[in-house]
Image 1: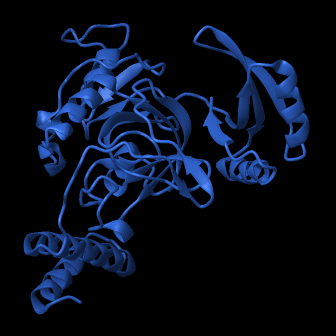
Image 2: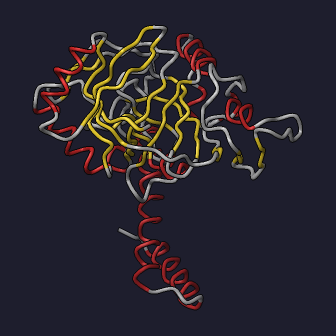
Image 3: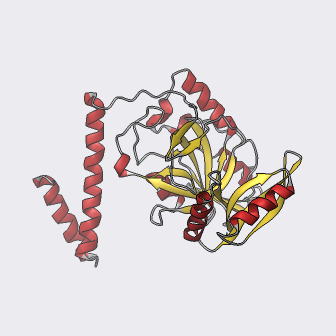
Length: 328
């Protein structure tokens, strides 16, 4: 409900913007959304101040847990590097406690992950537009089959898929930054949750990303990977980026698959493929993992995320609960 002062400001803003040629409906919706957002922020801040919401953040990995009949196994994985579909969550969770005891603010650059420690630092790359964002994990989710990370609303806006709702993404742990946050959190230091990203360390990532053509930071600086500019390469710019800073790399062509599993024995992989091909055409493909050959069973490539969701549901329905959507 708008008070008199807010209503006067709303009328004035509408008048000014109408003179600029915008429609009344568009302006009214936009301004009401902004007013509700400000009111929500005030309410959360007041609740925190009055003690109605009490943050008690802790470093947390957690025990195996079950949601919707699916088991998840949290672990400290400093080499985590996965592709899949990213989603986001926002106002409906504003003011609630996250899985590690922080207060969720959709306007902060954070994310939820099913198994990584909290806090962890990851680089999320939107493979559709090339935008790459460093994000801090402080919650659990998304508990939807086929989704590998849930960004906050602000993080989704920065990386360019807030309006679409989902995107093809790559999620990579930044090991050194994660270890730094782990040490701070175990010492009870959660000053970084205030949004002061200047405290984040600027250190190299554990591995270099594959998408490394041309990078542009959120400050507008563009660097080519083959040309030095102020002695900073695109790979270094990506590795040194801090929480909340957007880096833009060249988008890459990708295909969507449903990966049923990976097996040491090719015969086992072929047997599984025969069972799941009722869902869609697939293949067995070899892949080297730490010097050993595994045989992946995949359905696809699939034409869209929606088609992948349907195929994943079908594969899970056949009893392969560990199946997931991957992007190559």
